[in-house]
Length: 314
Image 1 (cartoon, rainbow, N blue to C red):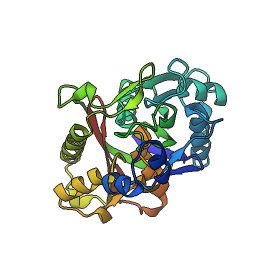
Image 2 (cartoon, rainbow, N blue to C red; image 1 turned 90 degrees about the vertical axis):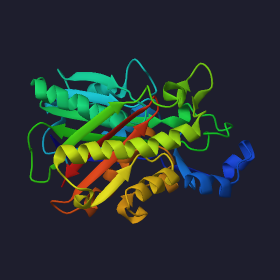
Image 3 (tube, rainbow, N blue to C red; image 1 turned 120 degrees about the vertical axis):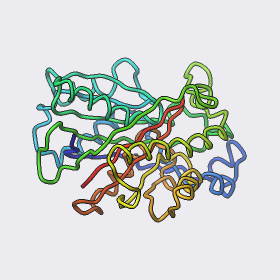
């Protein structure tokens, strides 16, 4: 598989740590020390996961080597959507008039983007699709509770869009070397670790310590699986990107891999936890810094629990 083009959208508004001292009593220093977050992105009142998805797709269209109407599969991946029936996949199909394409929604919490990649891989392998659009648009602040002292200060909003093809479309395509995912519902607190129950208290993380421990362990587990599948060593990777849940998680993963934070790319300090869009967003924001032949690994961990990794070559 190949990435033909990628784009992203981040709302302009930033919510500083100082805001949370007023609403839940957490100081800026406390938040920064425990999460590495200084501010987080927040969608405007007239924005939602659908509108952010369209903005991200428009950004990705600028480098697309074929007409968007040639897409035959649209996958929306995520959990913090505006509408769980008419998802961003269907909204995109209508907006761009992509007639005849399959349109569906995949959710595995903060692992959703890579699960979406794997679904696309399956469609390609079965011969049922050749060109896909993968959308991941997370409107976390639509569901989060700012007064929640355990996780209300974590969440940011953002969207990414990736065009993926079975075969190479241009010389600038990025090759996907491996996609690995794994469900972890039987591990730790599993389904109770992170919750999004709109009829109750929105998105919450009642067992943060459990999430921290298993995120560190299983992002490395996912990376090791992808390295084994590709016969690569970690030294072959130019950069690593983790799910942007917590800067301390990234630091712990780096330490366990005998790496430094300089070996990782991140955006959590300014954007917060942008959910399943986060790792793909970091890649999109930094795509121009890589040279042909360089390899990058993206590792994720999601509530439920779940994990995943994919490795690319520029």
